[in-house]
Length: 113
Length: 113
Image (cartoon, rainbow over all chains, first blue to last red; front, side, top):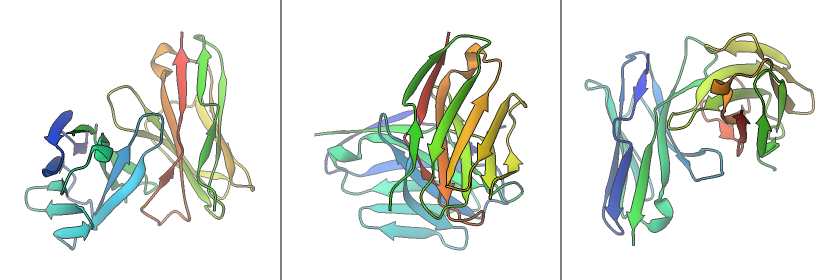
């Protein structure tokens, strides 16, 4: 059972515009969420996170929004740059287990120059 | 401070063989987790080691086993390889079990023929 879902496999955005990547989760016990970015031939790199006690966290061009009632979070990238082209994963730690991460299936973002 | 490294980068094995993948965690990180990423999927948790002992396991059979050494290195061993074991294998380290952010290596691409 996929507890973290990313329903959009891909997204294309023009350079300079906003990119919005979405993530849904089913487990209401999740209390922390992370976004990772993955380039080909590299491991996932941590991008930004948010605690469930907040509804927004901002870091430069990246902002994550959390809607707990909808069990939905989104990552906004403004303005999008060609170097942002990568696969983005949302993830949540499993507090009932080894604090390992549940990952979504990823969204491939392509920023068109 | 060095990052997480993995070896080899690529590996080709045949069904039924055994394989050992290696990971070197960041210095001072006493917790290492291994993930399997199949094509088009997000990483899936295999198991975690904390201070050289397994302390969490995902839904993987016993033919997936591991070791962690005092020098921050670790191994993932897979016996009796099956075609479905073909995937990218990622290791991730963190300072301790409570830390939410995991730092990933570049992965080992395993192909089973």
